[in-house]
Length: 194
Image (cartoon, rainbow, N blue to C red; front, top):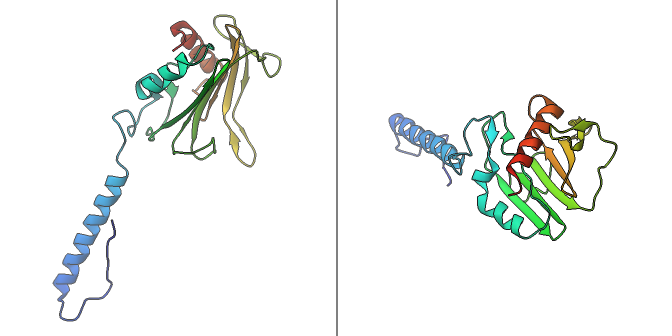
């Protein structure tokens, strides 16, 4: 939509006509801005404290889970402190591995500006370093808080479950850091693989 705004009146146009055109142009501009900012769904585009992945991407998660032997463990909810943006899911799978990336823009490729979260499960892998956390069920885990340099890396939780290493990376970790993520992981394990 293009809007033409002329700063000077055309020959023969009255001041009243100029004001009327300016009002129409302003209303059209505001309407265009509201229209382009409209949310994609009821869940997306409203202020909330969580994002429910199973409600947003039920078919995609189900398809991913049937194509791998590795349990697809996702948190029941993702913490979020602002208006939920339109979200895009990208997933990959093989017999021994799966991964999901969630972004606020299509084709994000985990760029810091649009990255929301990523989840991965790999059979035959090991924890990246010595555990510094235990989940409520006793599973060993490694927690890494958000780290910033030239850009920020997300908080990460890596834990073992049924012979696989599960990795979660969150741009907005829940308040409480490692303990809160550990509770989310325990809830995911209790619900089971998707």
